Length: 277
Image 1 (tube, rainbow, N blue to C red):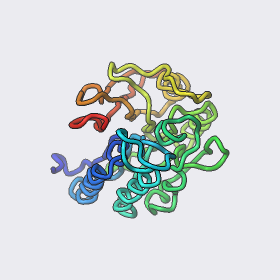
Image 2 (image 1 turned 135 degrees about the vertical axis):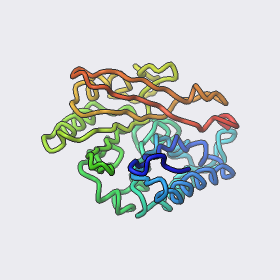
Image 3 (image 1 turned 90 degrees about the vertical axis):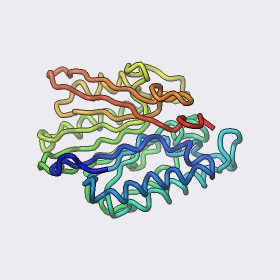
Image 4 (image 1 turned 60 degrees about the vertical axis):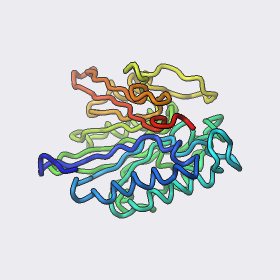
């Protein structure tokens, strides 16, 4: 691949990796993806890598759970660590935390090993771009709720706002205040979160997960995106159906209260060419 315009640059979006790490035989797929990114940093002028979350299939199971994978959670997190390590100190990346990254199988609670593996100091380029961060439910700082700053080749300043799965009310309050600060008035904000739209291009109103104090796509729009002056894009993942490309994608553009256009997209790929298993 090459850039048609030498003045442009690339932002890479990696889809939910959970199906790639829950089977030992599939872990090489994620290795190939991050290796491809590493090889193309210079020719494609890759400035940032985003991942849509659900890094693992099960956050905290002690052994594989056939047919839904043969890897323990610790081996799944190790696969994530190993795959993204090749990008450390070469290109910045921001990884969303999805529902499968919490609880033991899928957000039965908000405990996660994300914070043990996705740390601010593992990639010096991330640490350099980190501007703000917030706390998890246990009251500890986490990159699952964080704000990163970068500038594109035309010197346009951007913020990547990473939000946990179904962010809590206090997370959205922090995020709104953070991006609304006067020093970010001229920045373009890209919101990265795991769950936002369904494959009908509709913002998700509610999902049947046991956690409370949770905001899904429509609430994120109403409480954060629509009132903002600088959000220009929302990127998410989460959706899919076996071997159905359209079920893995969504796209929508809406005008905010101030009349500015926001592009919203969801992108996943993990159940194509083999289904969930």
